[in-house]
Image 1 (tube, rainbow, N blue to C red):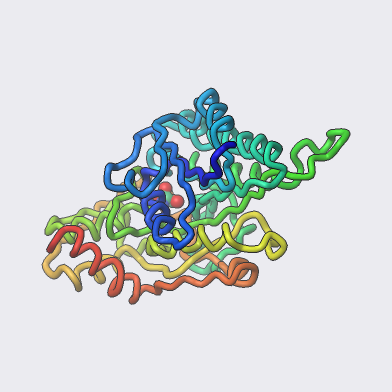
Image 2: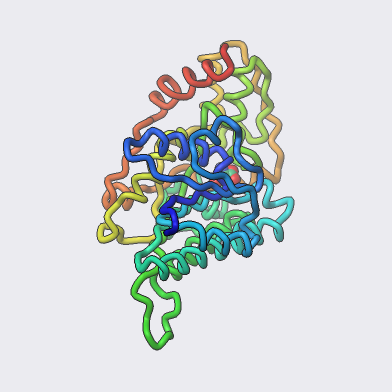
Length: 340
Ligand code: SER
């Protein structure tokens, strides 16, 4: 008998770390297999069953997973983030798109073997949006899932396309087959705002100025922001991001009216992040030297997103508004983390 497991790709990233911790804390702990090209940090390895060091582009490796495990749910977190992707657009396309196709195929195969759908949980991003200019951004009401989806980054294009692939694999895959498939992929995606963790740093994103500012301040270091002080996007504290993934995975299928859901909690300008950071770490020197390329990317992301569909369909609500996020999570945890 194959062992029933949850598969997490890209598990050694910051979302993966949070997800593994939360799963480990569940009363009914699932068996967790992770696949990450970097392996797994030692401390987090203790919280999982198996770590496979490997590449989501390695189809032989994915075939081997097929024979060994019954995969119930896939959290497909592996991706190259937006800034990294601009430096290596074709590599980003391979990892972000072909990697996702490989995992979707794995899910289809698994579903056939077990005669039950495989849940496929996919983090998407505000990078799928492309607001044309700052004048439009300034007057825009919180954007819904279907508005302004004209991304200006390879990462944004990749995420948007993968959202469509997920919907296709769930509802239309092999639509011309003589005998339509009764079971398949159950794809569910959340579009995250910029995420901020007290424990880990993102790598290669364009919303990274906020977590970088906080982590620099907590270590007593100055920080130079690569965006202007007025730059505003939505953010979310990491525990809420993990909560969103788990809530969406648990939602009854019949309640879901769409494949992709915005989730949001609070919007802040870079200057407001700086102010909150300096309130807790007085004397931190924060300066601004906007880099035009990265500034343009963040300027193309909306200042706020509308998450009413997630609220309506699966009762989403963020636990951490800006005050709770900073006072009850980010500041106390980061102090503990750096022992300041
Ligand atoms: N935080 C991501 C990035 O900056 C956006 O999803 O790439």
